[in-house]
Length: 435
Image (cartoon, rainbow, N blue to C red; front, side):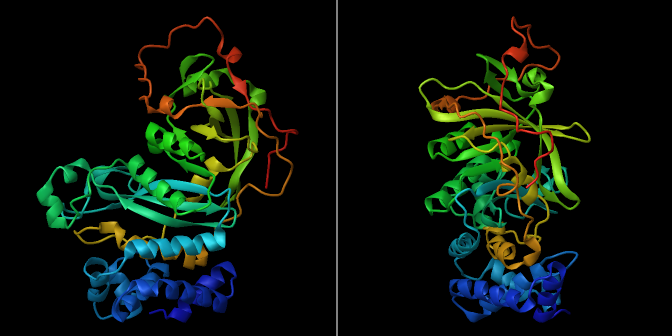
């Protein structure tokens, strides 16, 4: 069994941090949220749970963590997560405020992403057969959407929402048995993400950008909300996503055929385990919306320098930004290793109890300090063209244009695509941009 000091030294040794300083900050953070627990017992169990989540355990649940901290049974931790009364939303707000105090940046990026936990049986709230990236396929799983606050200094989870499939929300008896509040109804993952983003912005959290994967990039409601608030976004879209350029509608991958070789720019998306993650990038200007607010719309294309694999992003920028801005790279940096526990228990709020405590991991664990991202220092970066275009939220309320049947090639056009593509000005020099 590891003691608190053992865990502190291990965390400190791995990243060459001062163990005493680490322990001091950990105690400060736990002391900050202690008042959210009315009794001392759940407060102590919460501390033990967080230390267990920080430990190097092959599997993290109430049984393994209780054994790790020396408890004779998991009853105390299961009581904390399933029956004890404490304000998990207020604890979330405390962690968010603490994170912003240490990492706050007006140019911060809000990252939305979902994660799933594989389940056996049908009793876990929100559990059903659905796609989860955890397994990379359709499995019986419970899925939650998370909001991450990312800056050059680090990142941390600041919010979470459980996704309830329609098979749950259409079954009142099942909801009641699981303890789901009556006011909770069906909400898509983009809707959950919008709720969390608005909650963070309404709380005064400084952020200038939002990024997420294709689930969120294809949602017009999320994009409209961000544009109305003046928050830029870099959201992934599928290769068959349709955009308007040159007065006509094109699939993203078809529009790419008009991009000249000189338009590609080599830029690092940040450091990974093997050094800088270098990609080739190209910006394609999309058509403005007549009468809209001053802003810029772009289709951003990322190309793997080794495999040639492509990724597409729909971008909206309220003002010109450096071409090397890491919006699309930040999601990849925070998407991966997590310190979340294996969620247990068939009752509401499911992951809404453990993750608010798991949010402490992202702030209290030095192992989650991430490498500095692109955004400061280094060579001068060329700005995207300063010409602004219009954008009107009403335009985003329409459903995306239907995707053409792959068996039918796109109709011939009178003008070559290359003549319709407006590119961003390339950076000077041929060397890849490094921070």
